[in-house]
Length: 69
Image 1 (spheres, rainbow, N blue to C red):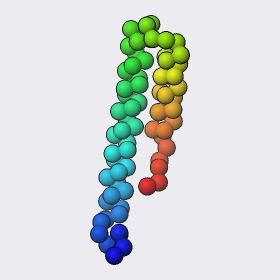
Image 2 (tube, helix red, strand yellow):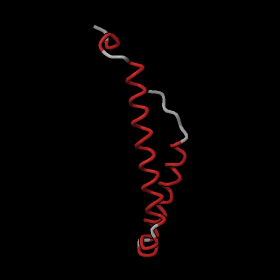
Image 3 (tube, rainbow, N blue to C red):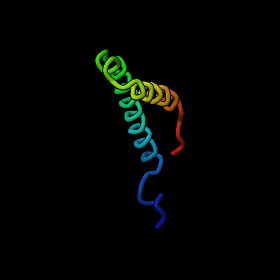
Image 4 (tube, helix red, strand yellow):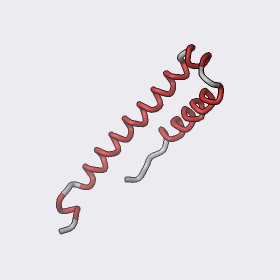
C-alpha cells in the first residue's frame, strides 16, 4: 500500500514546515539573546563569541531559506 494512501502528504509537509520554522526562530532568538548578554560577551573566550556570531549569521541566512520537504 503506497504511503500516500495512509497519510495526507501535503498536511504532513505543512506540519513539518511549521515545526521547522519554530525551531529556526528559537535558534535565532537564543543566539541573539546570548550575544546581547554583556557578561557573556565580556567573559567568554573571544573565539566562542566569534563562533556564536557566525552561528547568528548562519541562522539569519537559514531563516530566509525555504526547504522543500
